[in-house]
Amino acid sequence: MRSSNPSRIRRRGALSLALAAGVVGVGAMVGPAPSSEYVIDIGPVSMPANGGHGDIAQPAPLALKLPVDGWLRGIAYEFVDEKGEQLPTRMLHHLNLIVPDHRELFSQIMLRIGAAGPETKPYGLPWFLGYRVRPGDSLLVTAMLHNPTPKEYRSVRLRVRLEMTPATPWVRPLAIRPVYLDVMPPAGGHAFDLPPGRSVKSWEGRPAVAARLLAAGSHLHQYGTALRLEDVSTGKLIWEAHPKLDDKGEVVGMPIRYFLPFGVRLSPDHTYRLTAEYDNPTGKVLPGGGMGALGGIVLPASGSEWPSVVRSDSEYQHDVWVTTGPGSSHHGGASHHGASQQESSEHESGHHTVAEEGK
Image 1 (tube, rainbow, N blue to C red):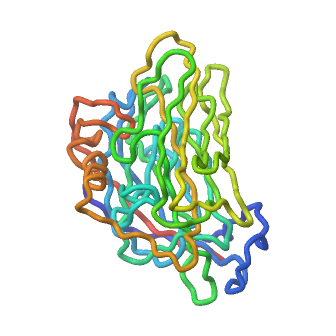
Image 2 (image 1 turned 30 degrees about the horizontal axis):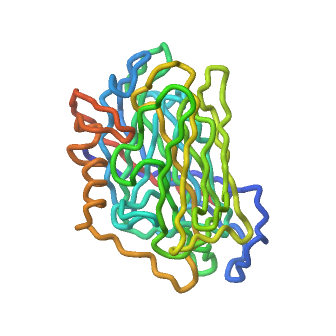
Image 3 (image 1 turned 60 degrees about the horizontal axis):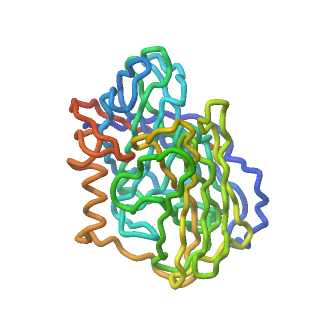
């Protein structure tokens, strides 16, 4: 996979969000700053009509070094054809933005700093929060595509847009860390066979350091009814999310919850459980039909040091193998969602661009 880095200039105002800036004390900051947009293209890919992810030559993971110095504050995506015209966003099965040089809060797997599914709308952080990015930082972009439409598309590109605030001495957002939880074990496939009727799948773990959960989003598949995060040690329900469904039971939207102004404390001496609930009316087992994941942001406790990645750890190595190695979907192994693909193919590169915006 090769990459290029053409740049283009555009102007746009800073990202505006409907959250009051005063909910967190941020005396070092004076207000929103001009933003820049970093664009990553993946593809081109041919998308046969009514094609499942096993029918499509999936794009290989795109590894790159970020050339930007600033704060990541928003993520959006779109599909475009060779003319740049937008295509249905429901052709995305899932998208992950991964930092191989850092680990997750609840496990030794690589840090996920962003994710999206077909139901995901563009999202961003208030101006006083951000994920710090420095020139040369590694980023791994993985995606799985499918085409549930009756129309064939060729030369399709998945375009990922990262909203950035440039680093300046007078703008210093609170440095957040993303957090990822799944109802399946951290390293490996994240889908599970969905039995008929009502069912529950859950996973438990402890955070490596103390932090406060500031916001969370959720992900379920068809026939999902709830995703629940609990503090097992205290018996407290932290959040329960219910999907928005269409008349076919397809998930068309998932809620996002903000725990501002103070967040929810996550303690390393507490055990937390993520649970996905489903109600499968088909009367049969749906292979790989279930999934339950939570993605959010945390603010590490003052004075706490985020644990370093341990590349020799078996969990980390298995995560790399499943994500980029022989176990990944583009190599014909187990996919992110646990499916198996037999075909292998050559994949053309992605490319990335920088668009500076601001006032």
